[in-house]
Length: 111
Length: 106
Length: 159
Image (cartoon, chains in turn yellow, red, green):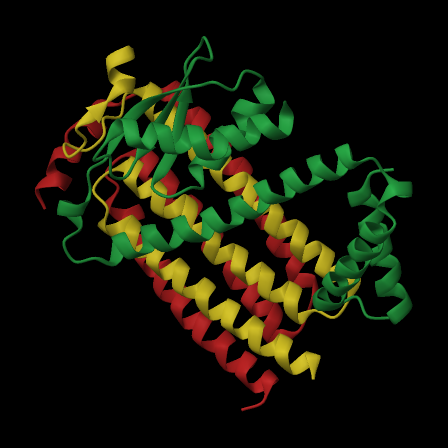
């Protein structure tokens, strides 16, 4: 019985994760500048890959495998904001300007 | 529909959706317009790739794929860090300045 | 011994005894061990540890909740047809109350994964954190939101 329920939950996780990935990709194409695109890639994109790891953790009835899936998920969630932050910082310091829509820019003001 | 049937069906649909996401991200890589944009899109490709491998791991029931996905995550993270360093040290190139206005006009 | 570590060890023992290392079974084992530890709490560990553990736990829960919320919100924003009108991006300077490096790192990471915000840089004197936000209708409201939510919780855990 528990196997059946786990299979259903894992399937739902997979579908939601794939949907998140598609939305992240749409965001990367539609959003106007680097910094707004970063929101889409770092949050929504991470959710997409993370949910597939969670799906494995739910479906795998084997201790080490579950542990590895959870470690992978944690790793993904911890590294995504770091890489997004590094890229945003590098772009900011290199002088890439945000889109014209950006009204407030304390960073440029303080430089 | 039994649990495992539903899982197979969900995995197939997910593979289709991920392929679509992959193609959309490639549009951003081709369009640019700046280097950091492309780096970001490549980072996104890596996370779509991780999701791909995880789905294949479930579909084929072959658990070694999970390690491949984790390793890809590690390599992808390091690659993005290295690219960020490069972007910062290279600074702004003359080529990159103009297109950001063009993109806004579209 | 820390209560959290004890509970996880007990959960693992539960899983190996029942011979089933599945996620639901591990969670069930964890819940039962926590219940058992709560029943005998006077002898096992001090309430101080338990409080810290609970605070860290609530921070983790808050984090996952905010991550899910932020992903859905960005997703809805991306899919809305009048994208350009809804966007109001801006980079704001957030005055840091948190002092230590660990706290600032944690806060910066949490900010990146919360609705509509992304940390960009820390000023050299560690007084300000530059945050990029998808829509800033009210700068002060956003600053208050972060200061009262995550920063307060982080300082509470690390005090």
